[in-house]
Length: 114
Image (tube, rainbow, N blue to C red; front, top):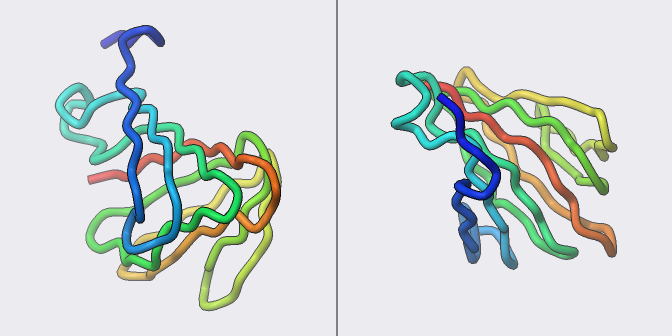
């Protein structure tokens, strides 16, 4: 399955998971194109001040990899600042949230598995 860049859908999402601001989601592979493996496979852009509200992953899991900027994430009940190249995962019923506390856009790959 090939999904060329010019065919990838971009959505603007306000208040994702109850968060603040606007998230730009570029879908790399739609759920129907992933052989039932992904609920989401996308590049997300969080504008400065944008947050993704706290939410849990069970039975699914979410893997993220920061491409640009910096983010504050919740992991294991603590907040951490992540930088380009850092990766994190949330699953097993744990919850997490994401905040862009910087003055630049933050861009990351997000894959939610079935």
